Amino acid sequence: MKKEIVIDVQSSEIAIALLQDERVVEFTREESKNSCLVGNVYVGTVRKIMPGLNAAFVDIGGEKEAFLHVLDLGSNFHIINAFLNQVLDNRKKVPSLSALKALDLTPVDKNANIADVLKNGQRVLVQVIKEPISTKGARVTCEISLAGRNLVMIPYFNKITVSQKIESKEERLRLRRLVQSIKVDDSGIIIRTVAEGKKVAALDKELKVLTKRWETAIQNIQKLQGNGLVLEEVNRIETILRDVLSPDFENIYVNNENVYNEICDYVTLIAPDCRGAVKLYDGELPIFDHFAITKQIKSLFGRTVSFKRGAYLIIEKTEAMTVIDVNSGNRSRSSEGQEENALAVNLAAAEEIAHQIRLRDIGGIIVIDFIDLMVAENRQLLLDRMVELMQDDRARHNILPLSKFCLMQITRHRVRPAISVDVEETCPTCFGKGKAMPSILFTDQLEEKIEYWSQEKKERKLVIQVHPYIAAYINQGFFSLRRKWSFRYKVNIKIQPIQSLGFLQYQILNKKKEVLKIDE
Image (cartoon, helix red, strand yellow):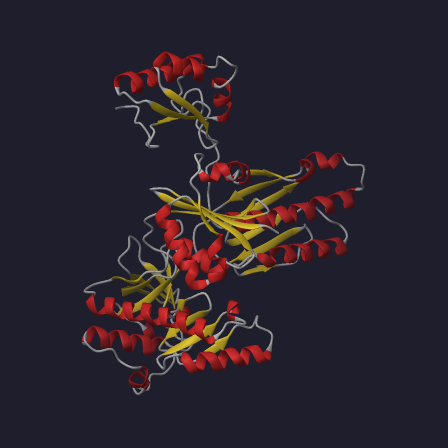
């Protein structure tokens, strides 16, 4: 299986696509300036205690107050709280774990009442575990952790744990001994699955990086006067590389030189063997168009998603849940029996649904309305297939057996809003205004702009980006419109088809690839 990562860096946003055999399996997009990433650590102030929810609302300096449940305090809360208070009281001294343990602080019980632990106006150290979604603010925890590729460091928690996915007892014992020999006394360590087989030098190097990040956080706490950010999580690109990068990734393409250099440095740090896979894309076409990602996104993110032999899905998102309806379409005319036909459609739908859930990063409650299956063995077969298909999903999830009505319920961990892509285009005739200019005049309008930029602004080379259909029309024939315009205005014209543009949309670029503003 060929695996690739394609990164499109724009001035306003960054889009990342994970490909398997040139098919998009994961897609994420976020603004370049995202103020509340998962993993960020803040000093906040408790504003409201909600006994009915057994939770509190915490001001971390954002637009909305963050939500802190009693279960997210963690058993180590009193030690972290004592650490924060001592640092804020004496900004020149950092308390040790032994000094904090000497205070004989009792762990927080899971059945505790939030009002007995927190009070209004109290300062707390929290970490974002879920981004703001819809009308809800961020969800935070007091269990602070700093994630690396091989290790997760937990400040002021003197314990070592090993991932249960490492099955070998000898390997688990070896890793535990290695980490015990290099870790500092004031922190706990979780050894991740990818650490299997790693040497002590690599683990020690990563632990020093994590320790340095925590020291930076302490320094920021000492400087902080009010509420605010004290430790920022690595950016989205590095987070994805940290979690998914493996030697079987053949290529990592990026279209920005600065980001390319950053990725090279980061990959060299976490996985030196993959350094050669990082490549800088400098083609003329947008990077997503070059790798046929734009077309895939437009076909995969609509309300209706087609799959095998005329069958299709309808995906609807509500406030409470995401609902997916399976329809057989033309497949219902098959010569096979009803039960066999329904099973075949459902199995094919399960494959596409697992793909869609991962692609759109759908979280919360997911209800799937499969085509009715009367035979219990067939329902079990469908359930087993769905469980198998969801194994590659990195998000925590739970799949329930099908009901009598062939409904399947899935819960999936959600840390950020689901990916939403507007695949509908503005009306190519009226551009959303409700009134249209004659479409036959489009090329005349384009020629006017060419004349303006070539004759008045003295541009000698123009790149005109248009819809692929329009590009084909302009380039049609030996004496094409492009050739006529070039001779008429003595300018080098290149027509570039861009899949992301609407039917009658266009952009004009100069030789420096700068977009020429039409209103200038």
